[in-house]
Image (cartoon, rainbow, N blue to C red; front, side):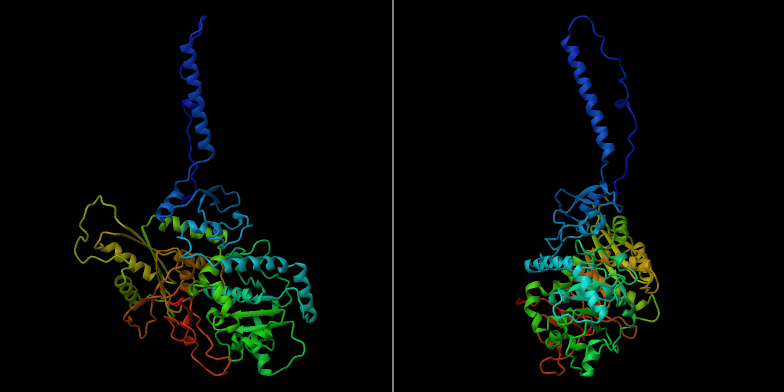
Length: 564
């Protein structure tokens, strides 16, 4: 989809006086000559009108290229496709609210991706439940009432400053601390929002280095960003497992406080201990419900364990009848790239992916001290993509495909994301130097290769967010085990990826990959604890829709149980 190109229209006879002089009137009335003059005048006016229309509203051919390439049949609606606030309206999908998942009330120019994204993808795999939609509208009303600098917020902050506890606060809050890499932050933010939905709290987001630069505001009429003058904001970096304000520390101290604290810190990082994990027990949730301010730090997608809590189970079933769509719906609702990031996504897609018949995303993440590239990883990628018919087969014959040169050939665009350029270069050269058996035209691209993860750099995170989103737009997706980068892409795209198994001893696993059974991310550090019996259990065998992950045997993941 290219921006509308201004087309210069050269002056010609249509804009000049007539090439021949007007008719030579004589004294007598001549109807034929009068009719001729009338016809000439009408033709001239028609030409002038056509020129003025073209000059005022030049056509946009690029849009229809995208719509045709994605095989989408969109009704005639208007949206904003320019990056600046003076953008001109063009065609957009009819269902820009994604089946009412998204709210109305936004200035479309302030966040173009919110309503344009459907131009680049096939839409939602299924409609969100009416109960989830209703719950989101109720949350938006609560956020508007209790958001930053409202009277309710100001009163609760004053209580926090003074150390007073109010047993009947008008609003309760959950503060999410920005922590870890971008993929982890997206997954934990979605988890925190779901917890806020379940407990009737208002989510406020620590902006960290760049949250406001990466994501649009998701809620109408009130910001989700925590004000910079929030009284605890300077303590966030010091909060840890051993902090005396943490819930785990309070449990260890066996303190029986007659008056609850005005705030509590929730330590849900990978290094949390058994006392911190009591967060996932109903009796402990009852205790936390009395506290106006909860401050959470996490690097885990902890949603699966919420489904194991009896107090939340029925509500979660009503919100998500299809259990493997939790992150898909929450992600499409919450995470809209800002105009700056959307520009990166849109321009790259238009330049390299929009004209393809098939798009393939390959996300490579190697957890090794050396950045690579490694031969065994390349061999694993090629083994997986050829076995599973993800990439076209390379011909072993000289000259390769023999067929009609006029026959339309399938165009395949391959998008590779990796910290190193080595895998891209070798796969690109493979399809340049060798023909395919069926004559497909294969183009291989990589947007960036940063060598090392640089989570504190704004431009690095812009590119990372753009690449996650681009991967989510592909038709077929290959991801790496344990990678939250890949989890975000598969969840947003509603695509079940092929997962590359983690390699051992630099050898290619057999099989090299497997198809995921669920769209959901994996909870890497779940508790293995039965809150009722207070003993260890296998939490991946309690209910049929919470099982162990394909890529991490001890992790937990949501699945859609077939009997449901």
